[in-house]
Length: 104
Image (cartoon, rainbow, N blue to C red):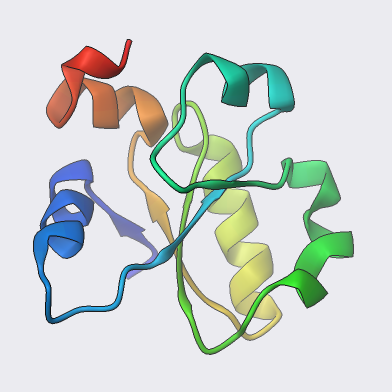
């Protein structure tokens, strides 16, 4: 499974038995300043190849962007490098629509 829904991510966060994933935001800094998921790490998609050594391959990653297109590319790249990564289906827009409309 390369994607998970906003509700699946919300349930994951709420489960005290599961380690929280690393939230990787692959948007641009301007987008990140507007809104972001709590504790997300910003690594614009174009910088990702140079930043792989910053991350622990043993952790689970959930990658997101605005609508989910860039995050799917990032997930393919991360998986190819040996990371456990999934994309947030629909991006932060879907998160706002389905989980946290107050984030606007």
